[in-house]
Length: 277
Image (cartoon, rainbow, N blue to C red):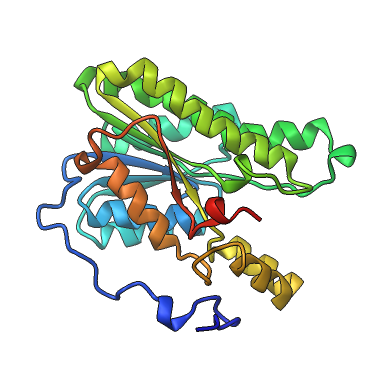
């Protein structure tokens, strides 16, 4: 069935409305921190972790989104808190971590999701563009992992999940800084999985497809149906991805159901990496 280009979703490919419910709230007793948790993949992940029983802390730059996302998590019957922070700034990273730990306790599930993408042909790119992209997309993950890891080691349990990108594996023109930052996230999980696996902490990343997030919706509204159709055609499964589908994979990797999975990059991408582009 041809995708409906107004939504990017083909009815025949819609995931089942019901999903298997986790009877025992598999993440009860855990504390999750989700960066960029105000919308898109981040918000869907925060809500899914809350549904699975975790207390959830959200760190993001937009106050209204942060407040709304935390309220949605609380509606699932768990504790939630938020910190408004520019995670490309080291002082904000430190403050966000301190505020969320004070509100919820030590973090043992860290989802490094926050990201920016600055479009620029390489020969016109600037150091400032690279510095900003790496600060938000990569160094925020490094800094928060440093802050959260000691408590994970102390309790002998932790799960860190980075949200990477096909652009860190394949190549797209005009997004070199973004691609480099996302490739760095996958290298990070391989290194740290090796270093801290013996101490009970797992590190993994996920690679989404083209996701129907507010950022992509804005790009489609600006550039028109051609961008929507080209985004759909990146996939073998001919539709855009829902944020909840990425969140489901992240929740699995966070849980003990993935207790023997570490150091891997999971493609949750509708076949982008298999198809290439």
